[in-house]
Length: 240
Image 1: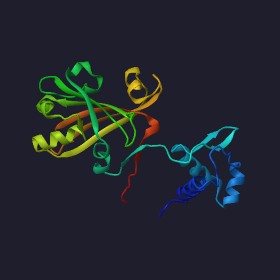
Image 2 (image 1 turned 90 degrees about the horizontal axis):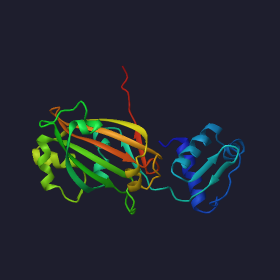
Image 3 (image 1 turned 120 degrees about the horizontal axis):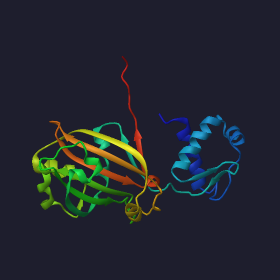
Image 4 (image 1 turned 135 degrees about the horizontal axis):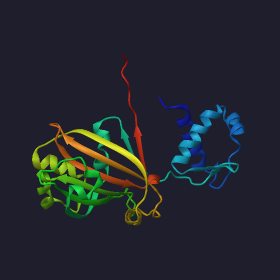
């Protein structure tokens, strides 16, 4: 069943796309518009928030709500309802590799506290791009412990994900993913790649992927343009 606010957002988008609400038009005040539509003000606000999130509406304090586009902006939605969905980034987009090198554990802050047999890691750098776009929405560095570093010689220019190569080469299966997301000021080098201003808000996700035996397969450090990436979590709690 579709939530009422989502249905309302879809109805408003349809009116925009059919020209009943043209781009540039300012919508009525919330209380008035909610009454006209026969919904509560809170439902309308949720619908507005959804349309603002996808770039259809713009809301400004004291200026009201304005239609600014008739098509949702391109965005990657990673839904985390389970392990399969959590790994969807490597299923639905390709990693365009830009280079590899060997790094020491103490040279990379995200590697502190993790073990690699030789105290060195294979660093694999790349970017991900949305379909029909030329500018990457993501910059990624993947760190592979020494036991799997031999994959460097079989990497192609474009790969779905590094852990898939490790799975195939070493006959392993992913059993656990641990990740943390953090808002950061985008470093200048990455900002240039994903078309952000240096220091602009960006989303960084650091993930550790383990096999079913509990052994670390990779650590990935991915930086995203937040306007083109959404992380959604939907967790159901069983009744006790």
